[in-house]
Length: 193
Image 1 (cartoon, one colour):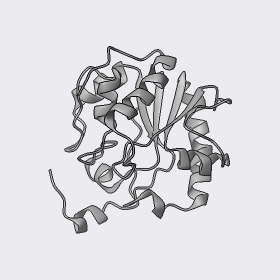
Image 2: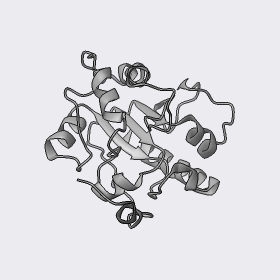
Image 3: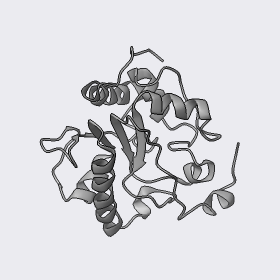
């Protein structure tokens, strides 16, 4: 599947439903959907995004998922069956996260707390330290497990897998994600890509 820039822009402002099953132990939280994600309806779908390769390398999924054309039912079932869920701090799709206003992060943080209280995962992992700092008013937060949980879950702030976060690699993302997965009780054997 491919889109022109003009086609992608028609998906701005849309949202993508959360992917959360009944036994969600690890809830992964992105910043907000990108336009490719909104176009395909699949989280972290932009070609080249390192999210799914990092999950696979961390041993969180049993196969490498390619969501660039949308998420297959089998891949959705594999994630949900592994106890993994996906949501976002802000539901509104944009071309870049910097298009979001501070108030959107704060409001999204409140909604995220409600989601966590409803779903009750063991671990919430927010993928983006700046998004976490802004949404929850913690300007000095660093990557890693946070001293206070959120909504009854242990809270990890982890690197965002976007290619814009160029100092991270699939291997470094996998290591960070693996730590949160172990804390959540979600992990298979790690693999080398």
